[in-house]
Length: 211
Image 1: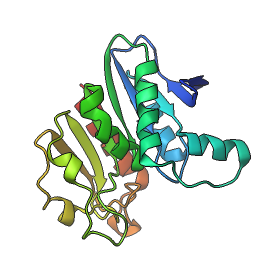
Image 2 (image 1 turned 135 degrees about the horizontal axis):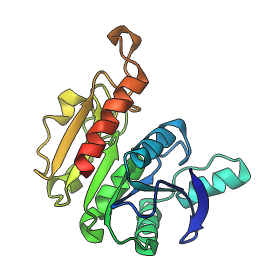
Image 3 (image 1 turned 90 degrees about the vertical axis):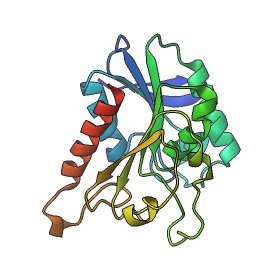
Image 4 (image 1 turned 30 degrees about the vertical axis):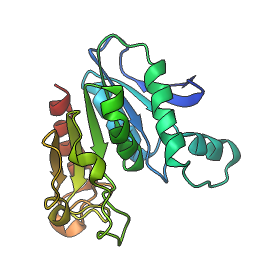
């Protein structure tokens, strides 16, 4: 059962047993909160696979939830500070993994070598802004030491397979490619696949990475 609470001054949702061997901390993307259908699917799926899962919201999203008014994401410095706050506040005896959707996963990868979790899971990594493939954000990934799984849609507008496979990235990074998936890993109907098909395969890749 999902439990809502606060930690380090940030709203959090917890799923799965606190006695699990692994804790997975997930952050949301730029435009949707921690309880979006996407985040809910993967958090509850990871919990059902025997992990303890903690989701948290960055300050701008928590303020948006409180006021109902849209706000732009916090500056990177504050997003990274939120990751440090949550990680340091956690009291967990087993292995800790960090990650999240799009921006949340990218921020996790930026503090990974500093915080030294057991691994990182990024769902839909924003390698570049839409339409700006000529300005990749790959520099921090070139020397990343923390084991990392990037789950990416093959036609993601922020990092499609053809473009991303040409990058020189750290050998610590492995990929799971969602067939014909967009930034939310959703395929087109012509493929005969559904969003749940791709999400389920992604979840299997994530649980395999955690084990």
